[in-house]
Amino acid sequence: MTINDLKTFVTQVVDEKLQPAPKDPRSLQEVLESIDRHMWTPPLGAKSTLELLREDRDR
Image (cartoon, rainbow, N blue to C red; front, side, top):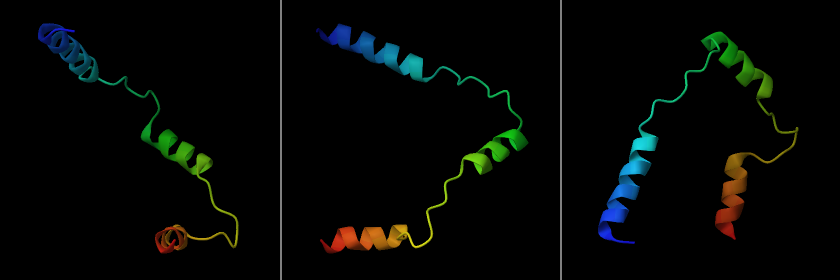
């Protein structure tokens, strides 16, 4: 791969990333309701994130 090939490749990747993201047709309320429906709650007695991090750190 030549320098020019690499420059062309990088330019193409950057151009792809700069494309506008497709607009979500859902309203803000629909998005928030979806988040609420899909939110996961750990079971009672499960260790907190802080406890898990401390255990990992102490190893």
